[in-house]
Amino acid sequence: MWEGVFGIIITLIYCSIDNYFKDLIDYYKSKSKDNFIGLIFLLFLYIILCGGRNAFRVTTNKVYSPIAKSLTDYLLNPIYNIIEFSRKKDFVIGRKKNVLYFITNFIVSFVITICGCVYNEFIVLFCCKLEYNTHHEITRRASILLEDITEYDNLDDD
Image (cartoon, rainbow, N blue to C red; front, side):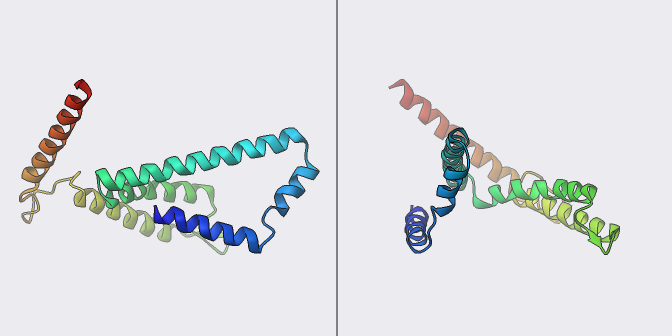
């Protein structure tokens, strides 16, 4: 809630100091009305999607933990590295691709992904007593979740 309040205050201050709507007025004058209506529609769609993203973020933090959201980002890092290496936009020094730099980044991002999965208990390691209480804790959380779902279903029946 406070993030939204401060965001509105800062936006209003920025809009009052700088002629923020000058670009929008210039676009309206230079383009057709269909283009302007399309722009307004896309701006509203952007606002709705940002609200949905923020609601998803808050729900993820409430139901799971903040690290669960970060894990989804970490899972994509090795894929992003491969895409950027294949596009020839990144990992370039001079005019040549630096394969060693790519391999190092890929290995590090893969290790971070594996460590994130271990931390979130998606992967359980059965060495150095890392599995100690893991099964017990996962079972306990699952039973709590099932109790919450059952309680929610009972509320619907009432």
